[in-house]
Image (cartoon, rainbow, N blue to C red):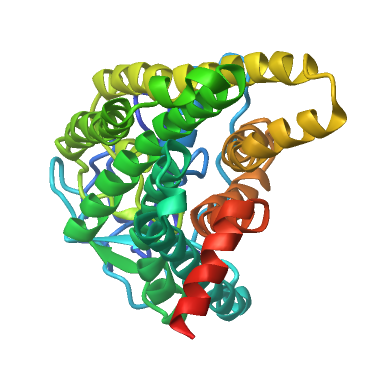
Length: 396
């Protein structure tokens, strides 16, 4: 029998399970920074279970609305560390050389299937989004504010999925599930940055659709070149700023050697939960960032589409209403996919299977959503289809 010691941190948010193959007379420490005694045959295995899966912005949304949204609980029972991975001594303040991303290792028979699916979706995503960026650049008919912001969104999707999927494919393909400390830091910096940027960019695109439908005669005056460049810059720079602040505060936390994450990629809230010190300052920053970069953009989107709905209902002809709705239906579909994932994840009932379900939802918005976005805009947009046909015809 392997003795099991359950250690709970003072903050109540993190449960460490220290499992050892020690002799029965081995001493044990009851603190979160427990170290081995001479009686132990091997170092302890420390496994972090994330209370919820998802990218940083989804975690932020859940924190802000935690008063009425339930979050997935810890899965009962200890997780076995995949064979061949490093076991680190838990020493106060130390940072691990590698992190172990347990991901889908509990379902090894599923990993080859996921590898094929993820690889296929990633290739389609890169090809589709790169095509939109290229078309928006070379076709003069797409030199409008709408397609300028669409090109930004496509470039963002390629960058976001590329920051996660290659490492995911490596972990799905082989038995080792590790990522270097530097690689993990880069991953949560980039995902934090691009997640915040996408929230703001979707709000900017909704304002563009509001101006096009509610102020059609003044559209080009309102959405002039300098304003479009300024809005795009604000989106990217705002996301970068919150990433630098939040991720840097997280990186400075002592991890006490804890290096196992029950997820398939590194994200800021999960790294924060590895810390063995008080994280109230980090949590406060998360609350502020969640309000500025999640709640406010969503509110602006809802207000914009409220005005758009009123304007469309005032159009007398059915054909006019159809055309007006067609100009914003693609963006509305993308917004629904993005925020729908948030609502679906954090409105789940609090049960043991929610954590595993959260992984698959996270897989959907990190892999499937960037693939679907260019398909939505290509299949539902005449201008993009005409530009694509013109470009293919020129090549042939």
